[in-house]
Image 1 (cartoon, rainbow, N blue to C red):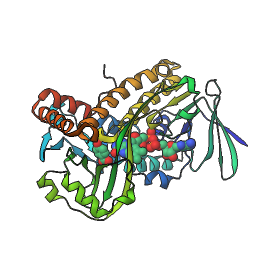
Image 2 (cartoon, helix red, strand yellow; image 1 turned 180 degrees about the horizontal axis):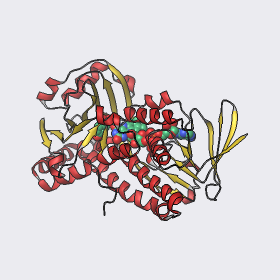
Image 3 (cartoon, protein in one colour; image 1 turned 180 degrees about the vertical axis):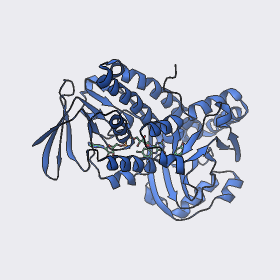
Image 4 (tube, protein in one colour; image 1 turned 60 degrees about the horizontal axis):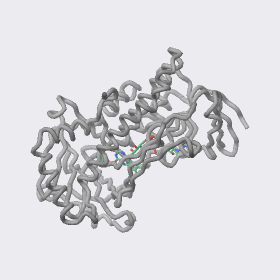
Length: 397
Ligand code: FAS
Ligand code: PHB
């Protein structure tokens, strides 16, 4: 067993762990990132596509803003489709100038990985048997094995940035954690294709009798599309032809006509759930990102919530080491959870509004259409949608 020591052990090299590492490095705080997968595996997971300004600002603060600046697509509106008609929502006008940026999580993660590699920061990929020890004491420890050699990493703090299926939350004694969960009765089938996006200035969200559809992008030549499908469906149930035919039935005629189709380069099924674990701190262990919460991707909040957690946690750790104050550490969980629950509400509300719920029948469809009709004609409700979509400020009341 080789024993090393650092200040902060970060479990997980996804967006949360990498962004936390970049911010701690900038503040001169020693840390090590440990992930059980390889970099290629992490990059191979196609996920989020829309960044709030809070997230873009954090990338700049971490010194990793060049990619989103050069290749991100700024969006000032979204479009809602219902009853075969498309309605623009002027997100920027309704929020006094705020925008979102279309920039893939894969590209963001690659930027963070490259930054980390150029700095030569300690990152252990393909670590096995990662275990957390004594995080309720002042001398927590992470053990793992790598290429058959056992390692012990002694540290001051552990950041559990290891996602929904990670080891950090699972290491917390059952009595110390409360979990809130809602599983939705459907999934999203996602397709990536090298065809020009049907809408390059606005994400399109469609409510139709056949189910939800979403039109997004990764660049001007690469599109990201989703359709709601039964939870029991498998990726192999959907060949490209079936996907392209189906998504066009869910859009308005003009958009369906305009959509360019082509071979999928990635196809994946995402189950939808809302999940929050409380609290997010256990002694010297902190949870951040998907390790602590999951939202249905409808509201494009997952990655952005993770960025918010990392901002709160990095500030708290920097304050601990630089100002010898634990005020940030002591309020981390409560501050993060306040913003998380607001995003959980928004993601649940938009998912409930836009998706087909078989059990709610024709009346349920009419209620959704009536609420959408009210929304697109109401300054108040469209402003509420817009201010949540661009992301609530980190210091929101
Ligand atoms: P991640 O899950 O990204 O990263 C966790 C890391 O921890 C992984 O690299 C993993 O290998 C590692 N790890 C896990 N267990 C470990 C262990 N025991 N030891 C060491 N390392 C371990 N969000 C959106 O906004 N829009 C979307 O469209 C969207 N689509 C999604 C689709 C899917 C299938 C999933 C799962 C999520 C999606 N999300 C989406 C949410 C997603 O973007 C997350 O919010 C984001 O990945 C959160 O980043 P992390 O917290 O870093 O967690
Ligand atoms: C995506 O581009 O993957 C994306 C965009 C907006 C969403 C969800 C996913 O609401």
